[in-house]
Image (cartoon, rainbow, N blue to C red; front, side, top):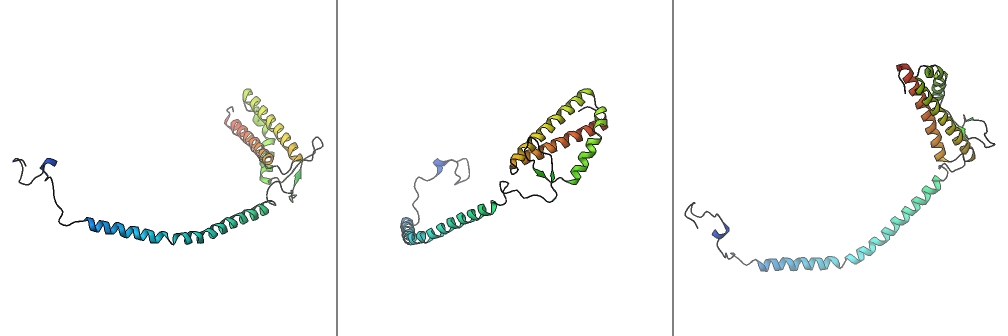
Length: 193
């Protein structure tokens, strides 16, 4: 120890005593605890095998129930999926046949029909208000959309249950409405598209 600090102050590891004997021997208690745990683990592992066997049928029952639910879901889903026999909607609007193929029947939303008809009636005046470059872009876009609609409707006439074609047709209708709405907004603002 150094003489600089209070008596008994430790400033480094060298100031600690080199050997300290414990007040009692701890090893017998540690050994007893280890032996007690080992005995408990041995007792616990012996009945674990029958318990594991008892859980095994439960797992098989759960797997069988899952397979059964899947089978019932597939059976029910067969009548709901788009590939099922199409049922005619009550207020179907059919378009004319193209190339001898039957066209799919579609139920049109009256609000959509009203808005579409109003936008188409005012399209000529709105196009006249646009700059020539914008007018050319709009007409080209509308022509492309109408060609796509005709092609999709022709394919739907051959395969009316095709969900992908139905989604594509809805998307082309939405694209057409988007273009018509943009034309209306652009012509009202007096700017190009």
